[in-house]
Length: 298
Image (tube, rainbow, N blue to C red; front, side, top):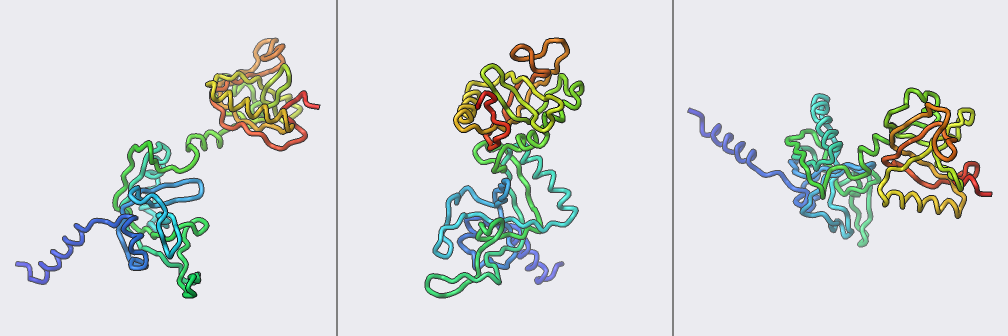
C-alpha cells in the first residue's frame, strides 16, 4: 500500500494538473508578481509583417501599465528544441496560409521587467523598463519552451495573419519581370502568370512596357477582365499621373498570349503579346522622369 507521503504527492500532482492556464487578461493584473516565473498561458496567436503577439479577445484594448496606456499583448519568444520546432512549424505555416485563427496553450518563463533598462517615474522613483519584442512595443514577454496545445480554426473576424494576404505575398514574389518573359515568349504562351512592368498609355495605346530591355521592344497589350471597382482604382491612378507626370509600376496577373500571326494585339496590332488581366497585384504611381506613364505628355 502506498505511504501517506506518496498519496499526498499524487494528490498535489493531480491538483496542479487540473489548474487552468492563465489568460492574457490574468497576466496583466499580475505583471510584477509573475515576472521570472514559469507559467502556463492560453492565448490567441497573431503574426504580421513585423509583429508577433499573444493576446486575448476578452481584453482587446490598451491597459494601464505604470500609469501609461499599453497594448494588452505579450511578445512570444520561442525557445523550443529542434524536434519541437520541426513538429510545430508546419502547423503555424498551414494555419496562416489558410487564414485561420490560432489558439495556443504554452508554457515558459514570463518576463515583465527588462533589467539594465531604467525608467524614471514621474515621482522621481526608478523601475526596470517593460520593453520587449519589435521596437519595444510589448510590455511583457513569454519565453516559450513548450507548446501544450495548438488549435487552428476558422474565425473570419479574427484570423491569425495580421497583414497583407499571404497568397498575395506569394504572387508578388513569383511575379516575372516583363523582360524575363520576353526572353522566352514561347514558354510563357498560354500560361497564367504575374508580370511586372511599367504601365504606359497615350491617346490610342495602353500597355505594360519593359524599361530595362529596349532591345527586346517588350510591350504587352493589357486586356482587363476586372470588376468595375478595380477599374475605377486604376483610372484614379492614371488620372493622377496625367497631372504630375509620374510613372506607374504595375504587376498584373492574367493569361498570357504571344503573337502567332502577322497581326499583333491592341490598336493597329502593334503589340506582340497580350495579357488578359484577372487580378491587379500592384498599380502605383512612382517618381520616374525618364519613363512617365503618359507617353503623350510633353
